[in-house]
Each structure stands twice: as C-alpha cells, then as structure tokens.
Length: 201
Image (tube, rainbow, N blue to C red):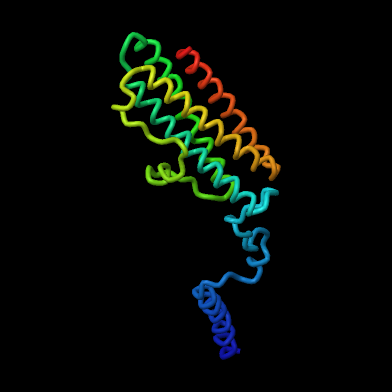
C-alpha cells in the first residue's frame, strides 16, 4: 500500500508535463481547429463585382486618362486664378477659384473609382503628362484674360470629350457607377465651358 501511492502521484505529475510539452510546440488543440472562422478567408485582393477583368481594365485605363485631363485642367485653372489681370480681374479671379475648387474636390472620386475597379490610380506629374490630352500652356502664351478664358474653354471641352469616350466603354460593360460619375462630370464641365465661352461673345 505504501509503495503504490507514490506511483499514482508520479502518474498525476506526468500528465501536466505532457500537456506543457504539447502547448510549447505552438500547435493548437484539435478542438480549436474546429471553431467557426478558423478556415482561411478567400484572397481579399480578388475583385468580383460582376464586371470582367478585361472590361475593368479598359474602364480603369479610360478613367486614368480622364483623371489626367481633369488634373491638368485643375492646375491650369488655378494658375490663371493666380495670374489673371486686367479689367475682368475681380470677376475672373473669383470664377476661376470656384472652378478649380470644385475640380480639385472631384479628383478623389475619379481616383477612388479606379481603385474600386481593382487598379492603381496615376498620381505623378510624369504620368499625368503622358496620359493627358490637354497640353500645358506657358504663362507667357496666356498673358491676357481673353487668352486664359479661351484656353479654359478648350480645356473643359477636352475633358468632356474624354468623358464621353470613357462613358461609352463603361456603358458597354454595364458599369453604372462609372457612368454616373462621368455623367456628373460632363454636366459640370459642359456648364463651365458655356460660362467661360459666354465671356468671349
């Protein structure tokens, strides 16, 4: 009887030691593996929004051109806000500020739509210069307010043309969010072109 007691005590002491050795391996118990949510999630980077990757690529490429045109026009409008002179200074200084402020606020929406489609948005001057259909105008070539206004008319009309091209691509792919975005931008830039054009008539 006195000899059997120590044997039972040793067996009880062995069990915690074995448990510690298993725990130290870093492996989870089998019961933990069966808990809900332990299955690896699908790749989060995969985009499955009901538009094929090829169509998403075409739309994103078009929106990248549209973003480049929009950014170039924003810079040009801001530049003319700073540097306009002459008898129309007060009204044009205020008009240009209203327009470039609205244009700046719109850039995020365009870039974020490209990201939602699963692609990177361009964001460097080099990329914008390569993508834009609007050319920069040296200030010495737009030294009077009439030249500035005419240049901004042309810039807004160029943005409209780019928007229509991309709108057709989005329509073919049934991409309603991109269509809505481009339609809204078309309305704005057509209005700006009309308002600016009226100053020259």
